[in-house]
Structures are given as structure tokens and as C-alpha cells.
Length: 254
Length: 295
Ligand SMILES: Nc1ncnc2c1ncn2[C@@H]1O[C@H](COP(=O)(O)OP(=O)(O)O)[C@@H](O)[C@H]1O
Ligand SMILES: [Mg+2]
Image (cartoon, each protein chain N blue to C red):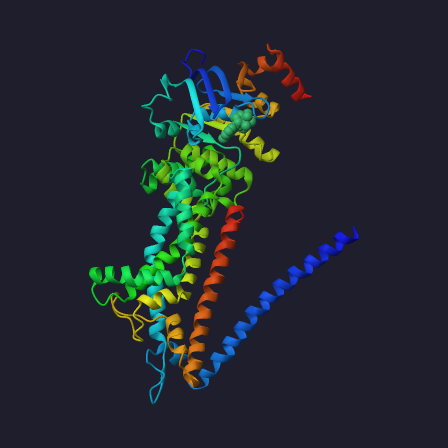
């Protein structure tokens, strides 16, 4: 695994919201088929960093980005980048479950449909496969045509994961995907990550240390817009090299 | 302490009194309307009143059928919405999603201006401009169903634009981001996610506009032609329920006068039904927002 080229290669990334700088000189490689955790105190730029990877920050007109983000070797901030194609390959799960107000089936078929798949049988297949992958199929298979808003929070979040998987991405970005969920739903999603990383590259923001410890291979510690330390998760937890990392981690584990 | 309490109870009493007064006013108007209109049905059956189109209140054997006016009201209102809904929706979507902050502001103030113009001014505009344009385009006298509908479309558009914009703007931003993050285009996101998600609010706005259109009197009176006949052509004349009341009110007596109040009852009931529908739609949109809409 160490030999394969990085999925993302980020160098000297700086980002401003208007005049206030939110990311400072971030340089980091993200490995393929692994789980990378982003940790750090609230407001340190984790979400902002995550959203540079699928260019979702483009929605905010005051944002200015400098530096380069290479995805499979190509700079996604180059003018000729196809953002639609990028987002198809780099999916995202949000902090608050955000199912569309439509049926479960239509939620999952949404991505494939906007990408041009019309055939009913193909869509049926995709919907079932994605739900199975997201460990939700058995719970909802008899109510695929009912509103997704009727699901519990944990089910909604797995639906959102299934919705991302339905477009067959390559990377899945997750921004505190379990922070709004109960412990049982959280455990289900953590187990799911174990399965998903065999096939996908996962970058997950969390401010739950235990969660980072359980699910991730590598961890990046952010502080005030800087990437302070980036290492294997065990190493970073037990042998932090930077004083700031050490303080944060010992504070967090109590 | 004591003074503050006194002040609070006084304020409370005053608020209660105002609320009570407005309820009493509605109640009195309703009672008055029904008491003045219902006696007609001792002489004319409800069925005949609603489903006959013979309106000859001053004939030797008078006819009190308002079907033509019911049809006229719905025809004019329906056609007005047919014009106003797509245009209003498009402008609302444009303001919520596509235009910059500055141009949204300009559009918003002109829409507000449009909403504040008195209906007699719309009527004058209708007489001078719309009737002659529609005469050229559609033939006939220019005083017609289509002219009335165009005026009403312009008058209801501010409501529809406003509600469409607000409903779309108030959607949680996660919905839009969720769609874009799946690789949908902005346009696909608008059409397939945002507009459907805002639909209850938008429908409520359309019904609100519809209520306004059905109740509008003066502007349609000035351009509709007001002939008491069943409207059969879009470029032919039309009389609506409101026009019927206002036209004869100045001279009607006896059963004729009673029949105008009965026309008012019909109008009142239509608008009541529309308002209830709006409230249901709004309630539904609120439960949808809260994520409570289950299977
Ligand atoms: N849309 C925005 N406009 C302006 N500033 C923002 C915006 N989003 C985030 N920020 C600022 O950028 C910094 C990093 O925020 P964020 O990436 O959300 O942090 P985290 O996810 O680590 O809590 C914070 O100081 C925040 O106030
Ligand atoms: Mg965040």
C-alpha cells in the first residue's frame, strides 16, 4: 500500500474567507484505500480543508485559494478542471444528515439519474447495492418508496452514505458524520468504515479522539489553520512530536 | 415591581381586546352577509342560483343564475395564474439562486412597488395599454377574458415571486450542498431538489395569489367588458362574481339586491376554502422542514 502514489497530494495550500486566512501552508499526501482522520479544536479549519478536496468551497464567493491540490496527479484548481466529474469521484457525507425530501429510492437514484442513468433495472440494482453497502438494506427494504424524512437520524445518515456510494465514487469525504447520532448508530457507521476502506479512500473529520483511534490509519492534527502534525494514528496518539498535539490529545483523553 | 406587573396586565388586556375585536368583526360581517343573502333561497333554489346562467334580475319573471359569473371568475383567475405562476416562479428562482445580491435587491424593490400600486391604476393601465394590445393580438373589442387575466397576472405576480423566493431561500443549505456534492449541476439542483423541497410553500403562495385574484374587483371591471353572459371566447367579454356585485349594487332593490348578497356568499365561501387550503399547505411545509413527514 505504501508504494501506490497518493490519492491527493496537497502542497502549500492557503485559503482565505475574504481577508481572514483559514488555512495556512498545508502540505500533505492522502493515501489510497485508507482512512485519514482530521482532528483539532473547533474552528481550526478541518471542514474548510475537507471542502477544498471536492471544491465545495467554490459556493462561497469570498473564498480565495492558493497552492495546489493534486487529485491523481491533476490539479483540481486548474482552470480546465471538470468540477462535476471531480465531485462524482469525490463524494461527501455531511455533519447533519441531509436526505432530500423525497423517497428513499429517489434519494439514492438521484446521483445516478443526474449522471444520465435512466434504465429502471439498472437503477434498481444500484439502489439495492448501495443500501447493502451502507448496511441499511435489511432495515428499509420494504419501505423504499416512503419519504426519507421518516427515517431515524442514524438511518438517514446511512442513507446519505448509500446516496454517495450510488455514484461509485473513489473518495468519500465525511465531515463529523456521527456527531449528531446516538452511540448505536455511531457504532454502525464506524463498522461500516472498516468495510468501505477496502474499496474507497476515506477522509473523515472528527473531534472524537476515540473515534479517530478506532477507525483511522493516519491522523492529521489541525490548529488555527495550520497542519501541525500528520502521522500514523497510533504514532500521533502515543508519540506526538509537537507540543501542541500532545496538549490537545492529553486534554482530550482526559 | 408592582408597576411593571400592572403594565404587563394592561398590555395583555389590550392585545386580547384587539384580537377579540377582529374576531367579532369577521363574525359580524359573516352574519350580516348570510342574513342579507340567504332569503333569496326562499324564492330561488340553490341549485338554480349556482347552475343556471340566466341572469335577468329585472325581467318580468326574473332569473337569478350566476353560473356565468362563477365560470367567469374561475376562467379569468385560472388564466391569470397560467401566466403568473411560471413567470413568478422563474423570477423567484432567479432571485433566490442566480442573481447577485445587488440585482436581487433591485428586483425586490421593484416587485414591492408593483405590489403597492392601487388597483384603479392597474385598471387605467389596462384600459389604455392592455386592452389595445390584446385587441391587436387576439381580436375582439379588447375588453375581454384575456385582458382581465393579464391584469390579474401582473397583480398576483408579486405574491408568487415573493413566496417562491422566500421558500427557496429558507431551505437548509445542506440540501443544496448535498446535491452539488453528488456532482449535480446548479440547474439540476434547482429543478430536482430545491423547487420540489419548497413546493408546499410555493403552492401556498400560488393559492394566496389566487385568493387575491378572485377577490379583485376594480381592475377587472375596467378591462373585462362586464357583459352578463357565459364567457365562451378568450377575446370575448366576461363578468366575474365581484363585477356582478359592484355593477348592480347602485340601483338594485328587493330580491335583486338580495341576490347580490347571495353572490357575495358564494365568493366568501370560495375564498374561505382557498384560505383553508393555504393553511393546510403551510402546515405541511412546516412539518416537512422539521423532518416530521413520515411514511
Ligand atoms: N463561510 C464562511 N465564511 C467566513 N468564514 C468562515 C466560513 N466558514 C468557516 N469560516 C471560518 O474559518 C475558520 C475555520 O472554520 P471550519 O473549517 O468550519 O473549522 P472546523 O471545521 O475545524 O470547526 C473558522 O474561523 C470559521 O469562522
Ligand atoms: Mg467543522
